[in-house]
Length: 294
Image 1 (cartoon, rainbow, N blue to C red):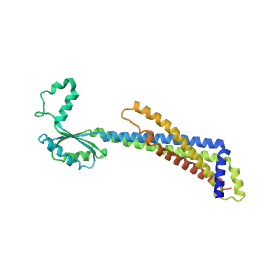
Image 2: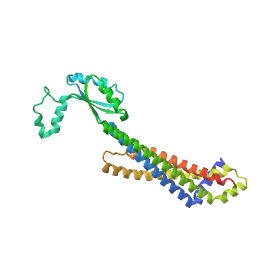
Image 3: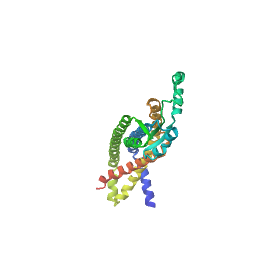
Image 4: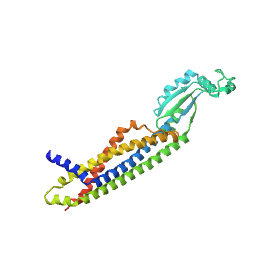
């Protein structure tokens, strides 16, 4: 227990003893975490928006005009058995005609010749789907239901959205991996500079019989504390940056709505602190290894 207290005391003392290197390490970790985290969050929001646009793309199914409204509505039970359908809405032909009149406003008089007995519209269903990748199979299943008399689906639009999503996922993943590698490289070299400045201190401890882990633990605790501090500060910076991007995106980019930061703040805090601690400990352990051979 006393030795554990010594490790913490020495680790915290090292932070203040080598203040410039500690500040440099924290600032670099903040920059790396902030850059990587922001790219990841933007990529995640764009992916959600594309998925939402795909799922909101509607499939309209017209029902055979020889079926009564009751018979047409009854087809809903068969459509509900199709697994990929997210929502289903029946559109009554008479209600559709009245809605059309309301949309025309002052020009509604052009529909005066039509009523429930000679309604040119047909009963229909409007679907949204869960997985856009399965849209073609879903349309085939819909058309296989007796009583359907036509399907309208913007398959080209859905296909294009899927392609955009796939390309963006690849690009964003490459960016995140690249930034992570750069972050680890910079942090590791920053810690190495700190270790180099303390090489004489490490040599003296080795010569008086200190074990490798006795020497290493204070540096591990130092890296952990610096990483945790960097994670918290990067989280606060991300909070402000994300909030600003949230307001900008809402007024500039149509159909793109970012998640409110409050809904993900604890997750972001946990990831930033965890990543900061991992980078700090990892950088300390790997960097001090070469200085153990005295």
